[in-house]
Amino acid sequence: MKVETTNIEGCYVLAPTVFKDKRGYFFESFNQEQFEKVVGTAINFVQDNQSKSSRGVLRGLHYQQGEYAQAKLVRVLEGEVLDVAVDLRKDSPTYKNVFTTVLSLENNKQLFIPRGCAHGFLTLSESATFFYKCDNFYNKESEAGLRYDDPAFAINWQMKESELIISEKDKVLPYFKHIETKVS
Image (cartoon, rainbow, N blue to C red):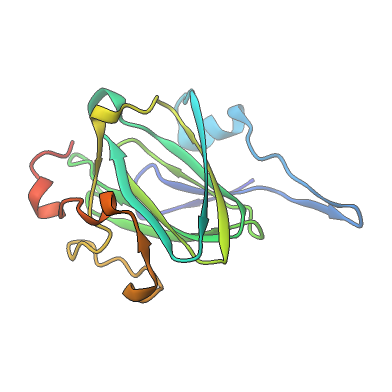
């Protein structure tokens, strides 16, 4: 497995070793022991989630607060997405940093996003199946988020605004300046 550090502390891009031959390919998508060596701590994933989205669907930027904060290991099973993480940890040396990467079926990369970071993605292909592991259970009362177009982060989503498909819930998320004092 190849590991790339990012500009967010504790956030890593993981690329498996893929074995290809005339039959197809094989790779180990998750190995607890190797994963914990990379992140430097024990992580117990307790929930897996999967979504299917069409081109232009933007989901995010989401996070869980307090005792229900979640670390995530995300990957794409079909298609291609622009994946985004934003560090909201005030005590982090990378506080307010944004990291973007393309995850796809072709590159098999995964992104580990530590607790305290917001996360979102945009489907770049005609459709994409997105899969992620969480180290904490979802709790509706603890969900939070930031606007995808927040000028505090100036994320280049690589599509025109008119091409984006965004839920009503995500369209009304607050800007960072309105929650800055509340993030942990």
